[in-house]
Image (cartoon, rainbow, N blue to C red; front, side, top):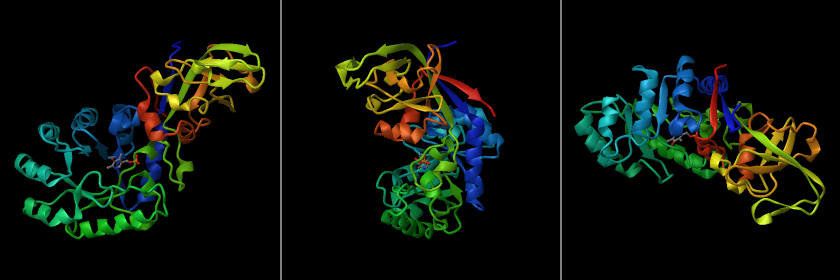
Length: 355
Ligand SMILES: *Cc1c(COP(=O)(O)O)cnc(C)c1O
């Protein structure tokens, strides 16, 4: 029995979540965003499970990630690379038959030279001001393409997790204007949060990431998703500590009553953020047990006074899962599920559950 923290990856839940997106997108299609090692879940096993379920379109950030997916999935998967053809990497994109997402006129010209008619996607920046060509550049883009057309025209939403935000409509209008430059070319607009907006935001290909793993902060639909993983850690020590004692580095917590504390083998070295000091939590059984004191590299201390009968040295507590909600845990640490999941370190043992 390893005493290290462990993440059980629920491939069946990830597939169920993808199917939920797939049903709600029809007649549109749904790809899967697997960048950053499938948000910490493991890109190879996750991509294979989704492929078996019928998913054929995958998105990653870097060409190397795309090459790994190609090795896992074989020749028939459609693999898009967001940072597609940044100079020096286009050769890998080409040899692995990846589809680059082109983000600037420079990349477009370079791909026209190197790609020689190979497919590409065009990313239009509709107001996020992060990546992509602007609307004003689209006529130059069309000129640079000659008689070639993108395989997909895409854009990315900045405020979709705030459904009433005015920026959502503004980006939609800008995307419509961009589409008019390339009639008949398939479109892709929605990330997870935008997928739950109203039907006017539907494109031909939705691109959920965080929702596949059960996360996301949109107030719409988030509760029907299943957790992509369960993170658990072991109880290493149980102590009865009297009132007025301090706990942890810097003595930032002082016990208000006689308490039973459990020391857990989990810390920021595993990706449990130090910003969860005195605010994060674990579940022991159905019981919420707060983190007491600072998170250290390998250890946290939690108050198990209310469930002391359940606490056993060597037993497991849940840190993320059905009880310990991913986004609630992330919010307690002042962050998002995205950062918590992608921050889980290599020390966390990964166990794959296939159903
Ligand atoms: C990461 C990413 C997505 C997925 O976003 P989620 O919020 O995780 O659903 C979609 N499109 C682009 C361009 C991305 O970078």
